[in-house]
Image (tube, helix red, strand yellow):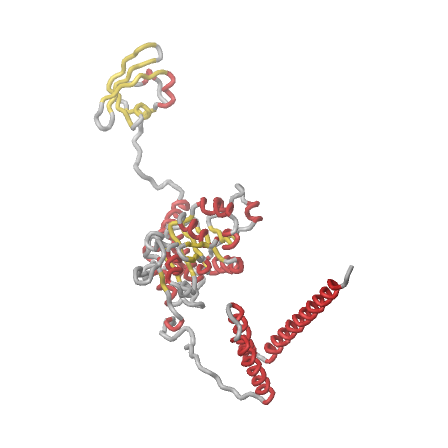
Length: 423
């Protein structure tokens, strides 16, 4: 601190000019405890300022200091450098998540993450490899890479209720990522009562969110960097004529997908055989590109940039050997015993006889009866116990229906006799 009386031309003062140091050129006394100071800034501009006793604590003589020194905390500097090194590690190790996770990924898992998913910014993608390909591991590697690259902080995984615990365990054990499963207890335990806002890594149950609009609003309003839908084929929508019917699960995916930067849909069965349903499914990724009802011959769905699907026959290990045994479909013949042959003939004759009767029916009942009788042959091929239970239940139903018809006929007879009796 400096007094007003000690301010003289030639001094360099801090606090005199808000932008930096001011060099005093002249000092003009105004009154007791007040002076007018003319000074020059480092860029050469001339300025003046009126000072009083209240300004003295904020003004001091500028001292010459070194621009840097070695008298800081060495441990703090080392910690900062190490943090920055880890933050930039992905620039020098393009597969950082692989080397820092407790997994040994297979070739198709590495290519899925580092060739198909990471280059897409933002990611709007369907991961549709065959069952057993390890889609959860691919998702975990992708999530870990995004976190290390500071590309995603808030992540939510939407999965069927039976799979949420499996997701939580695999994310923690294999990738060191702690995800919390949304429950009512968790909602009550969070400081604000809204775990969607308070927790960055969350797993929610698909049907729980789809059936509760209040939870949907909270979930979507929270904002997410990455949303992962497991068993995404459950997100269904269908056209009935020109009317579009969306399930609650589909509506949830629409709302949540609109509030996130990255959207990953995971399913082994993305296509149900109907092109119009498949286009509706893809509209979750790009609503403009796949807008409207699919019309064969008019619309051509090219989704090669939005989906990756590898069947088991194409999955190999690092040495090039197949990951799964070759699938072969062939008929196995075996000899029936005398009792099995007799049972087969009896059931077959029964089915042929009853199927002949079913052909005489019309409409919906004909199809249902024919389907039920065909099912008996499948049960016969399954096991003797299965066909026994089927025939036993069918016999019980027929006997019960026969009793009901007899009781009904007897009741009508009694009613007729009663009505003929004179009062």
